[in-house]
Image 1 (cartoon, rainbow, N blue to C red):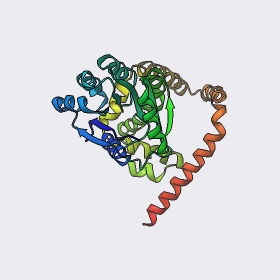
Image 2: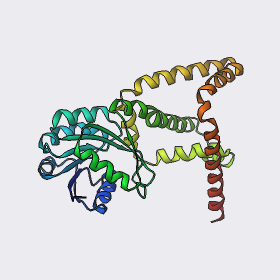
Image 3: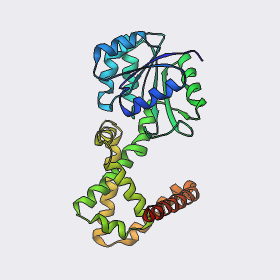
Image 4: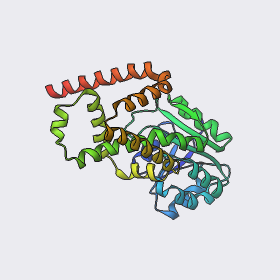
Length: 284
């Protein structure tokens, strides 16, 4: 494979650094640029074969607008953000280069690309699409090719609403001023999994979660539906109507029937692994 000159805008960040190391290991020349240095960004774009934007969601389109006109028509412009529709639209508008929206569905703690999912949204792609898919597939990545609009709709559930669920559990525990030691001491295996997710979320950069939720236009409708469903549950709780809740669960189970067996098996493995890891932790 021909050696390419790759500039990563935001390459000093954790995800940008991860991909910088990845492309260097694959034999390419990587130039990491701080996301706010406009002049350096423009100079790098003009001499690069591939320009990758890896900055916070709230800064992505602004950076694309600045760098896009300087990316050569025969080069590739791509981004690594968690939203795709607006960044892809901006890349198409402000550049004449090939454009591929990219979303790695893993974090910077991943050891490699093996068995990791990467979503690609090719918008104006020809030779560089083959280059990118070849280099990612060679390292064991699982590639999913979808439109930017479908990506954002799916990520509404997979990321935004999942994070909202975890956030709300954390906010609830805080508002009720529950003793964390007591919750841990008397928890069920399933609740320990939930608390691990809560603790993980609050231990990380809040801006990442806030922008995934606030910048995806699809989330507004999902939150409205979520709020209505919660209102229905509140009414059942207020009226002591266990039967209505049981009916709703039974009705929804038909929808989830195709994944029930797999979900039960997977959850058993997770719960056993968690119990085992906690036993090890107690013995140390």
